[in-house]
Image 1 (cartoon, rainbow, N blue to C red):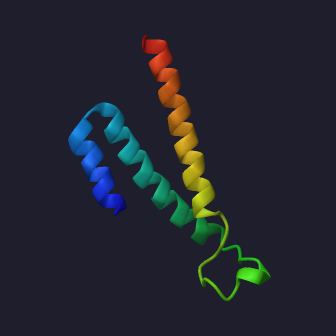
Image 2 (image 1 turned 180 degrees about the vertical axis):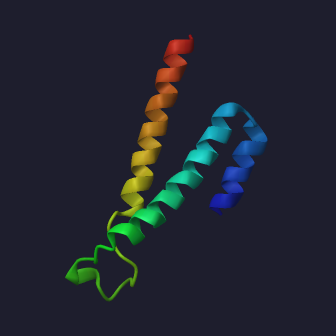
Length: 82
């Protein structure tokens, strides 16, 4: 579903900003997986039975961080170029 949405946005917009968002999203996903393996921090005791992979850093938190940074930089770019 995410792949279909990303492909749709790139086909619809096909501009530099859309490509940077896709490249950044993929790099963020790869960095998240690498950081999880590097830190190998166990999940809290209450969540141990739910997932086997390490819990630190949170993939959701890292994704929100990427999105907020990308949105901030996009707003700054639009402000500067106008």
